[in-house]
Structure formats: structure tokens, C-alpha cells
Amino acid sequence: MNLAFIPSPSTGVIELGPIPLRGYAFCIIIGVFVAVWFGNKRWVARGGQAGTVADIAVWAVPFGLVGGRLYHVITDYQLYFSDGENWVDAFKIWEGGLGIWGAIALGAVGAWIGCRRRGIPLPAWADALAPGIAFAQAIGRWGNWFNQELYGKPTDLPWALKISEGTNRVAGTYHPTFLYESLWCVGVALLVIWADRRFKLGHGRAFALYVAAYCAGRGWIEYMRVDEAHHVLGLRLNVWTAIIVFVLAVTYIVISARVRPGREEVVEPATVDPAEDGGDTAADAPAKTGEDADAPAKTGEDADAPDKDPVAEEQAPEADGTPQKADKS
Image (cartoon, rainbow, N blue to C red; front, side, top):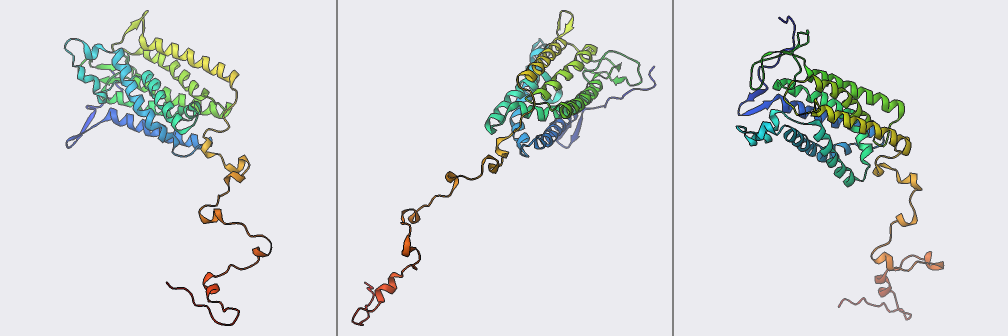
């Protein structure tokens, strides 16, 4: 009998009148806000404009949510398309089920579109956002706690997670793999921040470090989980995915450091001061428009003479002294 354990919430939903407030959704939303806020601070520190990270996130976040859900539904299709299952449940994202691999992959497509529209390099934007994404994952994992899902093998450790009886789960105490991954993601974020300051990572290497470090932890944490999953050669599919993505991320870091060492000097061209490029030129000078453009320039004595009043000229006396009347017709 366990004398100490982590309790699970009795429900993952709080009914506020007719509006259900779901803990899983709250964790995802808070994580997104933290990622954008922290990414904006890093972007501005690197010379970018405030608000650019949020503008691109408008593209990246929806793509990421769709990608994460697609990965989950495709890799766990039996939960939605087997006999007796309702395929409509595949759209109920608030009930849990987002694959980080699909979220990052399709989210990158959305970010690429946003970066292309703003004329900034995607690798630089990804570097700025990398630790924020890790913090967002750390927060988002607590959504699994609200849903009592994605726990590990049975254990009697003092920090075991108590799970209640429910659909597709047996009451007992289990390894809190959601907590392990949450803490690991915090460590990944701190690692990226430290390495970026220490080695001036650029051209996507900070983001690649985040990916590699996350995969290193996801591999052993995934191995502890007991929820249903597809296996390949005795290993869970997500373990193989973590291994492959880890190798790709490390390979990118090594090759990128050789091909494009250092860090980008300018991350957002719009923030460059025109004076740094030589100041205003003749082409930048305002051109004359309207009647001014057609008026001849005064030279010599004309330049010093005051402008003549046409009315005064009409009323000026003739040579014989008789005043000339102005024509009013």
C-alpha cells in the first residue's frame, strides 16, 4: 500500500454554466502563450521587431495543431476507425491526443509561410522560439494529468501517480511519465538557453539542439509507458521516431556548423537603419510635383527680384499718368 502518491483530478472538466472548461485545452493554450511571449523576448534581443513572433505564430499554431492531431489519429487509427468506434471522435481534440512529431513538422510549414510573408529567415525564427516550445511542452503535458492518460508502468514510489478506474484504464499507482517529460522539457529549455548564450548558436542550430535533446528524453520516457501503441521490432513506434529524429537533428548541427558557422547578423531586414546603409541618396530626395515641377528656376537678377503681383500691374499708371482700370468682365 502506497502511503504517498500524486493524486489525479476527479474530473478534467469544470462546468461554467453551459460552457465546459477543459484542463487539457487550458494547458495547451497557456503553453502557446508562454512560447510566443518568451520567443518574442529572444527575437527582440537578437534585433528583431516586437510582434513578429506572434504574427508568424498565427500561421504556425493552427498548422501545428492540425499536424499534431493528424499524427495521433494516423498512428492510433484503431481508436477511431475500428469496429464499435466513432470516427467523429477523431475531431475531438479537447479529449487529448496530439503527436508532437506531427505538430512540429506541420507547424514548421505554417512558420515557413509566415516567415516568407515577412521576409525573414525561418532558421533564425526557429532558434528564437526553440526554448519557448520546450516550456510550452512542459506545460502542455499537464493536460495528460487532467485526462488521466499517458502514464507509465505500475510502481509504489512515493511520487507514483494514482489513477482511478475508467474507460481503458485500471485503477492503481503508476509512473507519472507526464511529469517526467514535463521536467525533462524544462531542462531542455534551460539547456538551449545556456548553449545559445555560450556558443552563439545560429542558422537553426538552437532549434536542432532542442529537437535532439527532447528526443533523447522522449526515447526512455516512451519506453516506460503502458498505453496502447504500435510496435516495430519490439519497440514502440514513437521510440523509433525519437531515434531517427535525434540522428537527423545531430547531423544538421554538425553539417550546419561547418557550412554556415556563427550566427545571423540581421534576423529581420525591416529593422535595419537606412543610415547604416549610407543615409539618404538623391533618389530618396522628394521630387517636385504639380506646378512646381514645371516652373523654371530663377537665375541672376531674377532670383533676387520679388514676385510681381498681376493685379498691381494692371492698376499701374500709364506713361501719361492715367490709371489703367482692371478688367472685371
